Each structure stands twice: as C-alpha cells, then as structure tokens.
Length: 186
Image 1 (cartoon, rainbow, N blue to C red):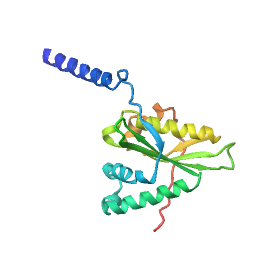
Image 2: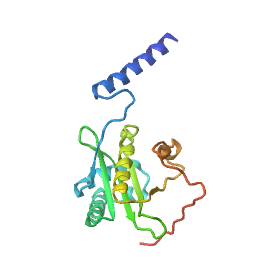
Image 3: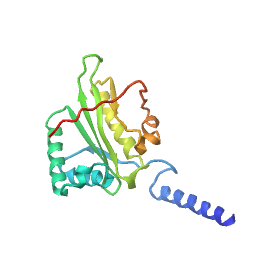
C-alpha cells in the first residue's frame, strides 16, 4: 500500500511540475495559438486525418494525393467568406488540431447558421485545450457574423461524444433531431 501511495504522490508531483514548467495552473489547458489555416497547413492536416485512421479512402491513397486535395480544398475555403478553417498550434508551433465551419444563410432563423463540419485533434494533444479553443474561435467568428447558432454532427461512437466534450463546451444535444445522409457517386 505504501508503494501505491508513493507512486500516486510521484505522479501528482510530476503533473504539478509539468504544469509549473509550462507556466500554467495545475489542470489548466495549454494555451494554443488559434489561427486561420493556410494552404501550407495541408501537410499537417493530412497527418492529423491519417493518424486518426477513421477514413478508409485516406489509407488507400498516396499521402501526396491527400495533401494535394486538402491544399485545393483550403484554397476553395479561402476564396470567399462562406467558410472558415482554423488550426491550433501548440507552444512548439506544431499544428495539433483543426476545425472547419461553413456559414449558411437560413430563411427561418434571424441570422445565419454556422455548421462545424470538422473538428479533429491529434490523439497525443487531446485534453490540452485545442478542441475547446478551436470551438471558441468559431463561436467568436459566429458572433461577429450575427449567426443565430452553431451546429455540429457528432457520432455517438466517437470518444468526443462518449466523454461529453461538446456538452462540456456549452453545446446541447437535440434528442428529437436525427441526421440523414444521401451518398452520391463521385
């Protein structure tokens, strides 16, 4: 039992020292640099998506193909003001997450709606505040644009859903809503 207590005390001390050396209070998320994504971020975003392993089509194509497609999509998103893509950089300047939001006018709401289509954080960076800070950046932009709301689709089998990530960030689940998709051939 004494060994278990000693191990616990050492782990708490380590966490506290880690927080101290990073100039933050214990348990406080790291401050990420959130900025608009550039075409040059395509390689980092490719790494994040491929690391997840959720998308079979990415695993079956060359890395360069994925990078080129993402760079092309980033150019499209930057071509007008109907899309925003943000990246989260850690203190070392590494891109550890990204989020994409699309601004859509709606006829039935007082203001436009922001649809968060993507929010992905490297597994090694989860729990450090990147996802929360990306959502905060999107919410700030939505407020500037006069949006009525932001919406996101979160699959129930995802870790983010199972640990109530969005609820903890102030989002509410609509139990009466359902999501449908129609696959189109390419």
